[in-house]
Image 1: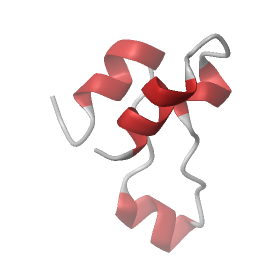
Image 2 (image 1 turned 180 degrees about the vertical axis):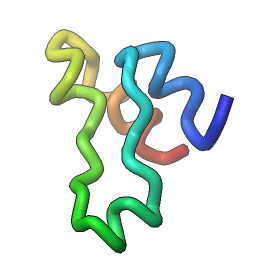
Image 3 (image 1 turned 90 degrees about the vertical axis):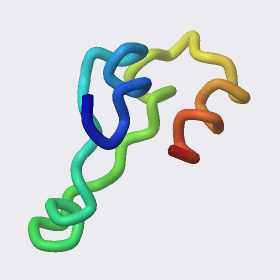
Length: 49
């Protein structure tokens, strides 16, 4: 499913690719910013992929 299929399943959005973040200065949005009731440990686990 890509670099972070789990993120897509949880948030409904794919994170910006590393190339997009570098070339177009896009921020990496934490899943908790999209799904506010996500637990801290779930957010941390998704950010480590």
